[in-house]
Image (cartoon, rainbow, N blue to C red; front, top):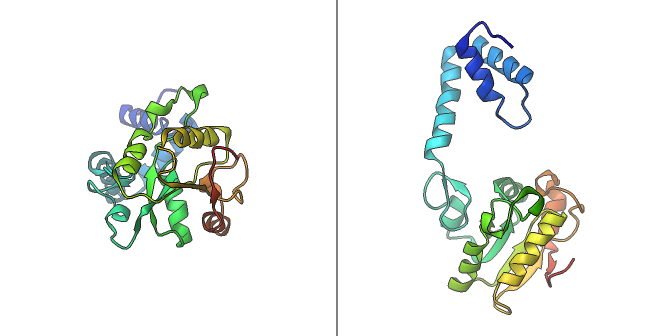
Length: 203
């Protein structure tokens, strides 16, 4: 498509790189931004620049944060010996919204998926094993999606952890099989955390 402005064309091309956004939707968004006050557009541009330049991953749990350590890991009231293993930041947000979990997290940054070319070395498994070996960890909760990839990831971690060193549990299967954790309602997710079951390498 030929655009009347090279600047508009560049904006549309960049917006269209976002997941789920085609060129028609990108054009609609770009034209919407042009109708907004210039200050509002500048605020959006500044926020995106800040996102790119000033966000970090927590050196302990790999959660997204503004400093080297996230607020959850820095919170002295959290149970540091209880680690909930999740796939990404969206799962942390979902569990935190229940208000019932007071441990800490370990964000893997994905799950093992040979089909997508994602192996154990592509996600934060080694650092989790190190946390168990080096820290006072009493329990690990697997809060991974109830999918083949999620189960595969949990099983791989189970095999990698030193046997008998920590209690292993999994959130109760109130979370539907094949479902994504981030789309689970708060009540079901809260009950799944509270009624977690021992993990023995199988489901």
